[in-house]
Length: 504
Image 1 (cartoon, rainbow, N blue to C red):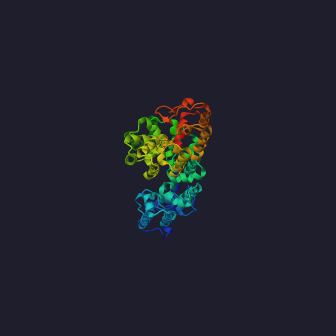
Image 2: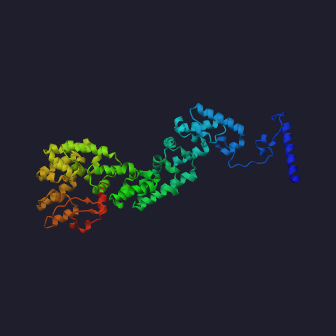
């Protein structure tokens, strides 16, 4: 050790000895074994300015844990920690999880935090669900975070519920973590007024990394045909897909639905309108429901059409619903299981339709003198009958009887008559037929577009009637009679199925 170092050490020991002698708070009878141990902050003694990462002009609850460690000695910290834990126990908070958490320096500061959370609407039980929130400073954590959340659209009255659902938000940084997520959502075309709604539905979004799951899920959906413009509305409707892994959740579901014969283009349109489909569990719900449809007699080739018409059928408690409806149709209309399967293929929404609603159109038809067997045939041909409003059916029926004067058997042959608008289609077209003296079936003049109807009126012959569209697994949508479709009316098969799907 060089002489200068020895000299400095001697001066230090001499100064400490003087402090020990002249200060009444230092017991004289104790031996000074470690002179530096009793000086909590030597830098203050020597007048050296102390540096810290935070300002010390605020109350202690605003300071980070490093400052509390400097201000208090180990013994004082332990004593205050015991006091704070005792206080928390007296108000019903279990402090066990706070063992490794840096606590504030006084009971008053902890009491202020508890009272602030209670004013938000949280109860002691809520705090016990996530006691780590007590480690957040009121001014440095809670107020900035809650103020920002209110700014982006979460009502002040809902902030307590938001914190209850996602208390981890109190630990986040507004600039580093929250603001980038909001910017990301706006970049997906989520409307500004919808941001608060989205966060309330799925607050965990604020904890995701932008370059992780959120970005990859959006990129994958766009890659299968989902329009980027529709991502924003999808997020608003079902934000949970942003937290789903592509490889283990989204892609397996998409691949399975495509394997059933559903074109990716149609699947993309379905997801745009009903984003919640990606939330259906593949193994426990989707596959079981597909197997259930097959067990009830639905042809495997028709499964894709059933899903396209009614995507929600993938997530229903299907076995119970189909069992109930199958029994109902057999009881009321004497329709056997094969007939019921045909009904579901044409209108899968019947699986969820209330039986009281179904009975009203049936009772109307029976009340017009139609035999039960004929009503059953009509329902199997056109299941949409059971979802019609009886008031509209009455008007169409009375026009059929009084103005058209046709036999009721034509309604049995073409029950779709009731599904057309009386004022917009039936009356105008029948009037034109009358003016030209044309006598034809209901199907011939109703089951076609306006352009096709005009072409038929100008033609010198009555072409053969055609069936409605049918969907074939693994192929395109086939339109029987397409050889006489005009060029202007020709359109892509996928678009026809899409319009059919959306309208249903």
